Image (tube, rainbow, N blue to C red):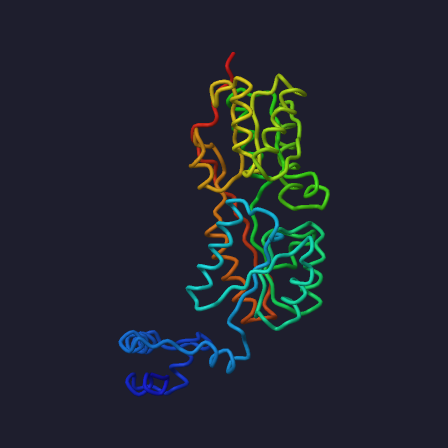
Length: 336
C-alpha cells in the first residue's frame, strides 16, 4: 500500500497526503482527519528508508550518554528511556553514544558521520568542549543542563539551586541547625558539572539565609561511597541531624551507614534531596524529595530538537524544571 492509494481513497493529491503525514505544511483539520482514517483503515506504514532518502534525513536522533563503564543512575536511566519513547512516538530512532573517558572517537563519529539529524547531549559541564564541537559542526543539538552562556542555547534542565535550597528551608522549618550536603563526586565538581556546582550554590545561600551550620561532602555515585561519606560526616560533625543530597546513587549506603551508627530515619536523623521519584518511593522510609520529572524532560528535549531540526534559524528555546518537594517519610523534627 502506498501514498497514491491513500490519496485516491481520500480524494486528495499525493502531496496533500505527504504533508498530512510529515507535518511539513498545514493541512485542513477535516482533510487530515480523513487521510488518517484511511491510513488506519489500510494499516499503512511508510518506508523509513525511502522517506529518509527523499527528505535528506536519517530519521535518527543521537543521545550522548555518560561513559559506558559508568553505571547510570535511576534519574539518568529514566531520562534515556523517556527520550527513546518520545522519539518512537514520532517515528524516530535513537542512537546512543557514550562520551567521555575513552569514548571521544564515538562522539566524533556521531558528529561527523551523518548518522543522525540532531543530538541530545546529557551531563553538561559549565564549560563543555562537546558543545563547542557541535556548534562548529553545525549539528542541531539540545543540552540536558546549561553551559555558562545559557541564553544562546537550546536546553532543558532542573533548577538544582532552587530545589536544594527548598530542602534546606524544609529542614530548617523542622528545627535542624546542622545540615550536611552530599554532592556528586569531587571529579565532577572539579570538572564544572552544572548540577553539582549549582546545587552547592543553592545549598550555601539557603543555609546563610536560615542561619544553619552547613558542610559539603563530595561522594562518588555508588552505595559504598555513600556509607563512607556518612562516616566522614558523623566523625567531622557529630552534631549534624540532617542530610540533603543530589546523589541518589549513594542513598542506599547513606541509609545503611546512618542505621549502623544507631540513627533511625526520621526519628533521630532526616534525609532529603533531589532525586528520581521512583528511587524516592522505593526507599524505606520513602524519601522526602524534589522528584525530578525525567519523563517530561526527555519528551521536552525531543520536542525541542525536532523544532531545531525543522527550523535551524529559530530563536533558542529552553525549559527549566522546578518540581515541588514531595513530603514523605524521611524527614522529621529535631529531637530535643
